[in-house]
Length: 210
Image 1 (cartoon, rainbow, N blue to C red):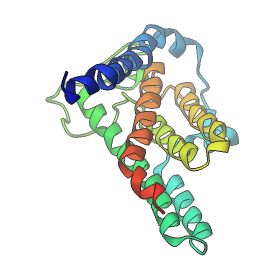
Image 2 (tube, helix red, strand yellow):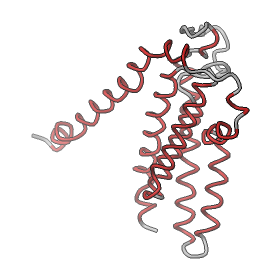
Image 3 (cartoon, rainbow, N blue to C red):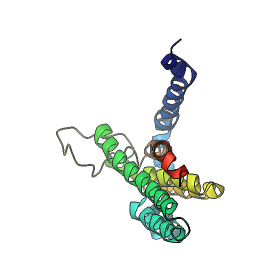
């Protein structure tokens, strides 16, 4: 058996099946609960609450830009190359996560839940083909939050559950605000996590060599 076949049979195929399974669990199955969650999870003025605003900004890219800058400034005096690599890793996952979310919205084209009172509504390709305004699948806030949380979990593993809890909270606020379906958020969680790990694999040699 060739090395390629051994790799496919021993690892790549399993990882592919695992990823497909995750997409079904985090993307397809939550759709069964979307209408029920829409009808039962709502807070009209959720973003008037301090805790909700705190959680929402976990999905705001500049939040993590500030965090990356602070981390770089703190670590630079002791190891400048290491500080720069770690800061760039965090910035990269946030940028990639945000851009990928916008591309997926353009492709999937599902509108926000309040457009049709919790029922699915898809925008025609002939209508604003290159605008993501009003599109919701996946949640870009959640995707950015989970990409950043995954990066922070790699950089500060002892505090990983803090980062993941904040990212999950961001997704919850998007549901409570009726800005997103439940499945918008769960798919954003999955792809954000994948982005965090994917960028880590690409940059791991640089991150481990400094």
